[in-house]
Length: 263
Ligand code: ACM
Image (cartoon, rainbow, N blue to C red; front, side, top):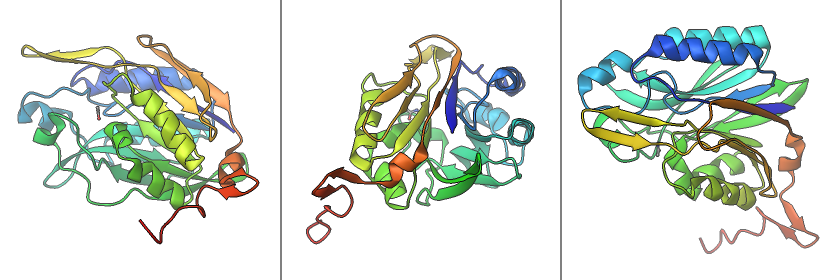
């Protein structure tokens, strides 16, 4: 199964331009699972509620519609971060779309920095989703960016059977990619982190992002890593079955060795 990411710099509040960029990149990309960055429809930095109101889209909006279409055209699963407008709240969300037209939603649990001013945190644990890729059933999970800092998220997904953790991101801290290596080792899962690059600037405020999107295997090996500042996509072949075994030595199994009697 081929998995990959598209790393780019979204334009602030220019959802049309972002959709065009995604359409153009994905048309040439060949993979069974493609992950896109956090807030890839809108960009990251908001300084007013009006900006958020303009940028946020419902989960049956234009960006989701494009992703469903691309998923069907390319027969691949797509996971993407979405600035989401729900009835009364805005969420920093991700969606997973499948060629058969299924759409799944996860709302970021752990908001970072000024996100706390604009977004409502999710109130549901992330779930795992079974998808059929190349005739093989695979369980996928979603977490978003700063969720990396809370090992409970990747652990919960892994205990629920996730083999590949999809991680749309706008990472800013220099050690986050390495932390994801640890998340994979702790759980013997694959991760696909799709990070963005560049800076968002608005009204004297700015924030920069670290690129280096990556695919990591259950042994913590970085199979593929993008540059820190280039718009690029990457794909790599993985065998998701590797994540089904939690055995680490002849005597040790990562999950059954847990001392759940004590913690
Ligand atoms: C982040 O969660 N976007 C740092």
